[in-house]
Amino acid sequence: MAQLVLSNVYKRYDDGPKGLFRKRKVHDYAVNNLSFTCEDGEFIGILGPSGCGKSTTLRMIAGLEEITEGDMYIGDIRINELPPKDRNIGLAFEDYALYPPLSVYENLAFNMRAKKIPEDKIQEAVSYVAPLLKVDDLLDMKPPALSGGQKQRVNIARAIVRRPGLLLLDEPLSHLDGKMRQTLRQEIKRMHHEIKCTTIIVTHDQMEAMSLADRIVIMKDGVLQQMGTPLEVYDDPANEFVAGFIGEPPMNLLPATIVGAGDGFEFAFEGSPLRVAVPEKYNPVVENNMQVTLGVRPVDVLIQPGTEGSGAVPVAVYENLGDERRISVRIGDTLLNTTTAEDVSYHHGQIVRLSFHAERTHLFDPKTGNRIRSNVEWR
Ligand code: ATP
Image (cartoon, rainbow, N blue to C red; front, side, top):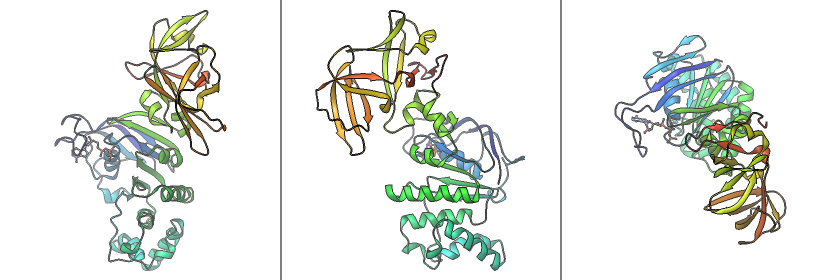
């Protein structure tokens, strides 16, 4: 087991951006001043959209990519120049890279054989790991005969069979279909509880990060946006990007103007007569005519039958998904999404009354995307 520390790490590829993500210029950083600590035994998720620098970060930790600037430590050893084989790391990438002519057993044993580990120790290691990943019935089979899910289980089993200090998983579930992803996700979680190996998973799937990780590192354009527990990044997003990235369906982000009303303030929306009271907690940080982005999660938007008052808005879309209903209403040019578990039914164009769970609203500065914090935060 090991603690991993990244301290002001930068990565610049001198040959310029690859693939589809060419917006970045040659001398921009793929990873830009990244610092975080992954505690001993902790499960960290690195999450962000395509091209944000997740895999580059993982590859630098693994020693497969040089660090341009900054330092990395495993325990108290600085690993910047340490060869990958000396880092005591287990790696499982998106593509399985199993040896097709070898049985699953031999695939698991391969690296230990190369290190001349005695056969009884190899057997012991394989028999411990195989049931954890449910590959014990597959040991005699060869990779071409395995399903995608089985191959990925073997891939992960191979990464942990030598009990590495640090386990690195790069999008290990992205090839798999929805149900298989969920099953394997639960198995990875169970496996981590059992072996308690410091683990980092790279994923663009927020559900995966939220369900697996103790803490999540959220990146955009090579820059750390926020690091926190799943609940922290959901309830207390640092900025508009995190707010819109975490949560399904995503948080509604509405351009609004603050207008004075009596002793307090209201949100006004362009092209809509709708007015919603600004929660009192924001009074010290807002002023008349201030432009904000109002963030409100679909579960925190309340829709009720009725046509009265300034909260009256037309239904744009109604979807019944069985376990929940999704209703979108139009506010000016923007669609505001709501979800409810209640058995309600609306139709397109119907006028309904809208209100927010005011304490759970978030405000952002539309220019910087940064959170405008109230004096009293809801938690
Ligand atoms: P994805 O989810 O699509 O794999 P990612 O978040 O893992 O994306 P990286 O693969 O780390 O992103 O890429 C980060 C940036 O670095 C991108 O702009 C990418 O084009 C660039 N990049 C990655 N590898 C190289 C390389 N070998 N040479 C040049 N640029 C690269």
